[in-house]
Image 1: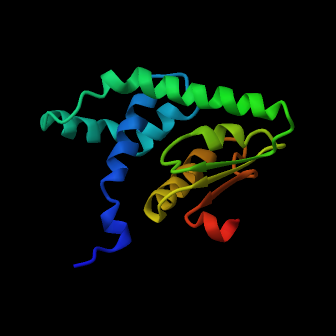
Image 2: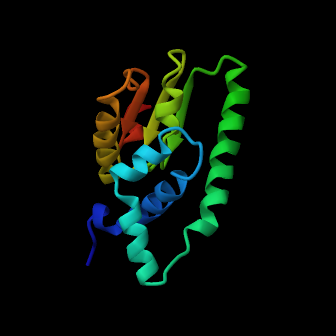
Length: 146
C-alpha cells in the first residue's frame, strides 16, 4: 500500500517543534514568539512523559548551528549576494529576520503542511510589527520557482 506524501513525512514535524522549543531560550530572532505560537512547550511535555527526549541537551547545538549558518550567509552578503534559498526551513525564523533587509530576497522551501503552518505563523507575527514579508517567499514546490 502506498502512503500519501503528506502522511509519509508526518514524523518530520515533531523535529521542527522540538527545535522551535529550544530556540526560545536563545537570542535568535522570533524564536520565543514562534515557540509560543506553535505551543512547543506542550509538545515537549508530551515527549518528556514518554521519556523520548531531553530537549535541553540539544538547545546549545541548535543555537550554534543556527548562528554558524548565519555567519556563512553574512560572509556571502559581503559579495553582493541578494538571494538566499533555504531548503527544509521548517520553523526556522532566519527568513523572517533576514528579509527585513530590503536588499535580500529570502526563499524558504519545505513540505506543504509545514509551509502552510509557517505562512499562518508569519501572518500572526506580522500583525503587530512592521511588515517582514516583503522579501520573504514561502514555497512548497521549489522546482516550479526555479
